[in-house]
Image (cartoon, helix red, strand yellow):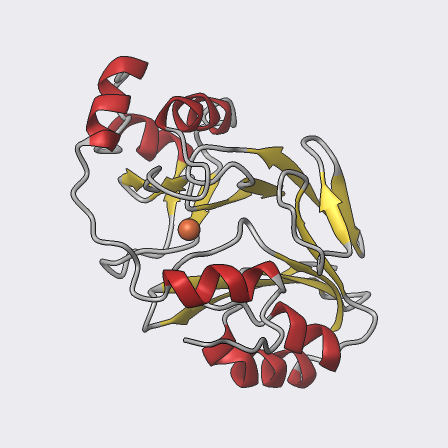
Amino acid sequence: MSLIFHPLFEKNSSTYTYLLADSHTKEAIIIDAVDETQQRDIGLIEELGLDLKYIIETHVHADHITSSCPLKQKFKNAKIVLGAENSVACADILIKDGESLQFGAYAVNTMATPGHTNGCVSFVCEDKVFTGDSLLIRSCGRCDFQGGSAEKLFDSIQKIFTLTDKVLVYPAHDYGGRTVSSIGEEKQFNEMIGGGVDKEEFVRRVNAMVLSLPKKIHVAVPANQVCGSKILSDG
Ligand SMILES: [Fe+2]
């Protein structure tokens, strides 16, 4: 028995999707699957003969549309999972801090990590943490929409930093092609919070980020509130 682990990438939004499975029972989970790459992901799940149990979102994304609804239509036993603070009717499970989901001999444990959005969660599995947009490689998520709060994000990242230094960090995005980091590296080198930056300075840095709104925000947020099922839009 071993853990099957496939990091996957969607280049338009620089999003990472993660497919994990128990090699013996074939039970699988997918984290942050993207609309554009759903055929690739479905193909891989079928090719590996996996039994998809959970379709997990780290948060309601503003920059891309999820494929959770189409994946559920394809893999009928799978359940859509979001953090408990998201008012998303299409979720089968609104998961709370400390709760876990089992797939074969493995489990993912939920860590509520609000700040980028109020509903953000991270997931820990074995020696890996999937941090969504809470902790990015050398950076962190923005806090200027969807109930974002730099103060909360500081506390959430400190919570993530209670994991041991060797734990590998897999974010929802990287815009520079980096694929993985570790808690130890981020504690030391993260440009927003590394090296012992205090809350006041962190909040100042987050609020100083100069960012335009994600191109897809007005389409992606409403679409993701219905888990990527087709919705009518007047533009
Ligand atoms: Fe995000």
